Amino acid sequence: MASIALVLALFGGGFYALTADDDGDETSTAPGEAKLALTINPSEGTDGQNVTISVTGANDTAATVTYDNGDLSDQMTLANGAGSVTHVFNKAGSDIVNITVTAGGQTATGRFKFVDPNAPVQPTITLEPSSGPPGTKGDIVVTGDKSASVTLKFDGVAGNAGKTDADGEYTYENYAYQGDPGSTVTVTAQTGAGPSAPIATAVFTITDGAEDAEEVLVSLSPAEGPSNTKSKITVTGRPDSAVTLTIDGKTEDGSPEKLQRTGKTNSKGVWTVDHIFVGPAPDDVVVTAQIGEGVDAPTGEAIFKITEATISAGPFIFVSSFQVATDPAKHAGPIGMPNETELVVRIGSIFIDGEAPFVPVSGELSPDGTFDVSAKGTVAGFDDITVRFVGTLAATTLTGQYIMGVDGGLPTGEPIVYDVSGELAGQAPADEAPDFEAFYQDFNNAQTSGDVNALLAALHPAVIEVFGEPACTAYLERIVNPDVRVAYVDQLSDAESWLFEGADQEVTVEDAYTLEVAITVGDADPVVQETHLAVADGELAWFTQCDQQ
Figure 1 (tube, rainbow, N blue to C red):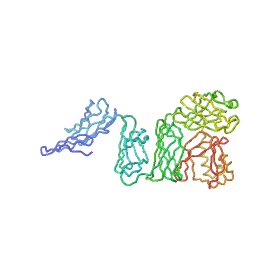
Figure 2: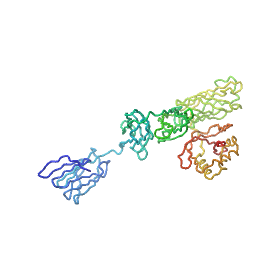
Figure 3: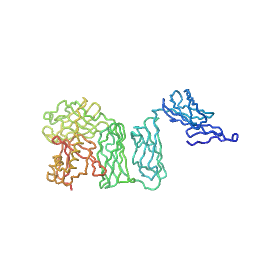
Figure 4: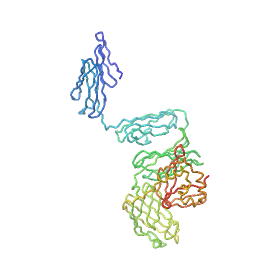
């Protein structure tokens, strides 16, 4: 490295120079002599580190290397004033070992530093860009320890959390900076946890050049709940405009996961979509909605808080007692509800199932474990009877009231009310989900080969019932496309009842699954959307609207 002269003085008609390299190594030379230079490689390391110590510019055939940590000195053989020796440094005291090389009256000094192999890497943070008008979007790139948690703050307010990848890098994309022109936004990135976790800081400068960003509102209902909670996301902004929704969260095992969904606001500027939030608890999932396209498109943000679940998703068996609370019309006998039965509970949202005469119910589960869910089913031979279950789910108990005939559908119009008290008995065997990936592989093969008969055979009978086979055959012949690919992304629900709606007819479909799929046409980017498959005659079947033009 270049040397910086510290002292230069006249000395006997010549000169004597004492210099220091950029890395702190010092060298002394006498008048007219070549400079003795010392190199230490590496200059930092861990206990037991092998280090190569090299010199050049010596005026002798040998050099002595000494260490101030008590290690024995090394003798170095020189050729043409240069040579090297390898030394193993074992930590016994100070983190710094001072090294001195002497050759022919010349000396050079340097040092070796012990470092903690477990010490966290000091992170760096890069803003791309680092300035712009209000509403400017940019990426924030953090580098540090591999697979380390990252916490971003904006002017001291927590705004995002993530994790570095196997290369020690994490990128938070499209953050929109806000503020008055001339102000700044201080961005800090902490890698790891705890008060001693290293922090890096960068500053974004707000410049002139743009008006305040158009407002985009994002609301969540509910806005918190355990992993697998279903929430309705509502985006409000510019009417009749494309919406890009980014959900920046984690998988169940804590790995960063960023999902995108697309849609369009209606004439009133509103777009809604259901999403099942998953991830470890507690955690904040950032939901960002962008309306329109381009770097200046307005955005809005909301946070879904993943809380500790009362129990895991299950399914779990609760041995439950049913005691008649009120029964003015004497329904208990005809219904025949046993005094004790097993209820199977799945949560996220909540689904409670049991043997007849119990009618399964499902709906939203509040973060505090309370629920108020209902359904329709057959009770004592009467169809479409509304039942309601109001109660509380805790870690080991299920309590509440189960009401049959809420809408007055039973004879005399009076309902029967049961007090329910259940205790956790263990985990129920999990239902084996159908192979959605295999279904879409067969679907794509049929598209590629133009096999309309295969696509027709895979339609759910409800589609044929609503539109008729001739209309569906003509429709499939018209739309079959070898460039279309459908890929399974995620399962959003367990098997449940679902209402398939045609133009003039509705059909209730049992054993239907709500899924997310990614649809790709040619070389275009994939589009993620919600769809349904259902089991019919033991096989998965799909749905479409055969009257589309």
